[in-house]
Length: 389
Image (spheres, rainbow, N blue to C red):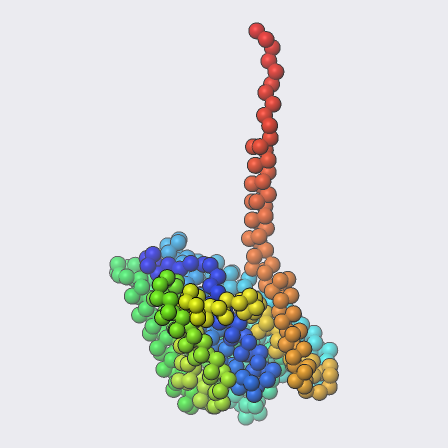
């Protein structure tokens, strides 16, 4: 069982929402205006760190609360969180491909739709990068599902490592924190070493490989063990760290122009930035980054970031089939606006009902029953009339 020292809170953290907003904004800018964000793909690295932190924290909370980790419940929660919106996007892409894409392109499009639905799109692209006939990696409307595939594969293995570490510590009456750090740290270091070595040999294969990306989730998970929640105090130090983290993410996104050496050592920069922002939290110093990251539009963008990531690229890809030409800059602005609108609708009508529908229904039912009980208890009591003796 995990000791209270590494328990975490489940509340939404504004700095993480801000990281999601920054990450998805970088990806959208990269896809719409590559010259503005030539390394906007680094937003994916930020997403991986955030996922590693949140998933590890979630599993440790469950272990601390119940003394065990239910893989069934974990995977059901992940399915409710990820599948509905993703499957909706794949369904729309399938229909639009059948309607507007030339038949000569169907095979390429549909093979990636299938790979995305089964969450091995990253390995399909990795294999294509080794095939001289496909190594140009021509874009399809679901190519961005490679990162979701990596994430899903991470979800399959990471909980097992945590369970194994906790079980090992319990059998030997040792500190679970130390066991977790050893097991997860070993996996993280091994993944980073492989990332550096493989990038030097084949940067395309390194980019799409799950094994070269585990370390990004891993460092987020290690942070969840060492600093699961932001401790009050040290406001100035945290404010400086928060600004430094944002700079480490934003500057390379806007300036890095050597994708042939990425991920490699270069990926350390945005990853370190994401860790710094999470550790810093929302400091109360007057010049804190919280004055920016806490703005309602930033928080809202973070809230819809998953749907925005899913929908923006198909929108960008299909519009030229309707217009018959590449989208000019003014049209790209409209497509970004449309992407935000579609993402908001997806969040409201697909994501949220799938994630919270049953919970909200139970809450409404419980609330209704509570109100009914209060009404009954508040009803005036009428004494029965008795005969006089």
